[in-house]
Length: 316
Image (cartoon, rainbow, N blue to C red):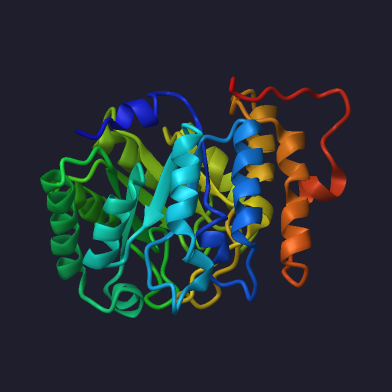
């Protein structure tokens, strides 16, 4: 059986690198497999332990994820936690066969975005989530099943989202047998008070089980929202190196919270991440070299970390 508490120990902050999947889904170019492998190895050496390695989609249409199995094997071989995205049953089967340690499926908090993104009503998405759990269980796999609820703080298609509706959907996902749930501020609509309220609801609902907070910095609130989420009980956060990312079916969506800036936020707040910040900043050179036309974000990379501060990575 899947052991969610082993992957996400209670009370500990886990920062998940999603740049290799979410970060590359909209870019015009992407790193080679060799460069991606170097990215994973170097971040792992710097203390990162959770990597979203790609999506299980047709390579002919999504060449940036053609190497997802290679990267899964690499992350698993390092003893890291490999995450993959599946958008349908075929993707779920491929992900389970590839051996990712966590499979993410997505639904939206609003009907309009679920139809645009998944091309199906939300109730059908819930049925398919239950089917993914069944496939995992029948395979005897230890893969965790995570549902990411997009547009959890506001929708670019429908506007306001009732946090009670997000809570209802999260509870329905748990009833379907998933191991953890994620809430996504997909278009950066949320502010600290709104994010904190939603996270308090999720903390009460999930109990001892973790939930994921996926933030975008569209309106400059990403880091403030992350700290508000932490104060409300959240401990698992997505971010991407240099803030790469966005959603193709969310008008106005820009990149994810910058991974290295999020590390700095937590470390300066006295919240240990186990990540060597200066080493992570140095890894940006892979993106500059492999994707020279892409805009890289992040204030810390521009200013540099303050002199005299020390960072300690996880033990190898």
